[in-house]
Image (tube, rainbow, N blue to C red):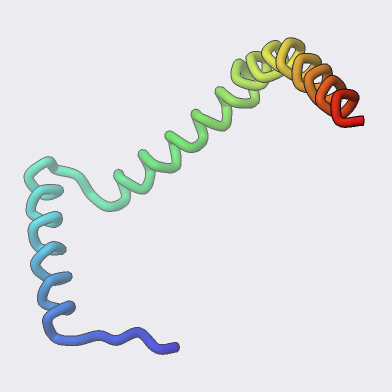
Length: 80
């Protein structure tokens, strides 16, 4: 399957690229800064998940998992 590119699509992409580029230039941002920010955000989310987030997940699982297992056992016994 090949992608269909026409002149209208290329012009539309060029116009949007110009608009976004002008906005980024006026905000004094570079693509490297944006990619760096995305990388830093992902790294901080990962750090939170491994640190505090995992603790919250395990704490919640001590309540949620037994309730789930009990409800599964009860529904299984009511079917028989």
